[in-house]
Amino acid sequence: MSNLEQTLSIIKPDAVERNLDNEIKDMFKNNGFKIVKEKKIQIEKFEAEKFYKVHETKPFYNDLCTYLSSGPIVVMILEKENAILANRDLMGATNPKDATDGTIRKKYGISIDKNSVHGSDSYENSKIEIDFFFKD
Ligand code: CMP
Image (cartoon, rainbow, N blue to C red):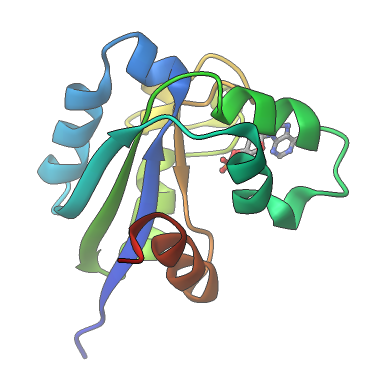
């Protein structure tokens, strides 16, 4: 049965700063994702805090929010069959040193913080995250 899904992807400041956004977008397209909407923006720290609220009790929360708001990012709605899982597979492990060959984080990630991309981790969060950036 077909299961066309949409998921939210963010190309993070470390990748945009290195001008990797087009290469990363090509990786999505070459892996069958359609980029339905996209925009390059810079967010304020309070917006990053809202976006990453699920992590607010974690020790890395403050640094994470400072980092996501530190420079331009590219936010995209990606569409594909089983897009949420397919995107997580293509991104690779959160920590680039654990990511396998062929994944975005293996190829471009610098550290667990500067891991180049974010992707929704569940169907429920994909709805919340898409609304966060693209609610008209
Ligand atoms: P992301 O998929 O954007 O979701 C939360 C981010 O927190 C994660 O990628 C990492 O970049 C960052 N992070 C920093 N430290 C950790 C950690 N110890 N465990 C998980 N994520 C971390």
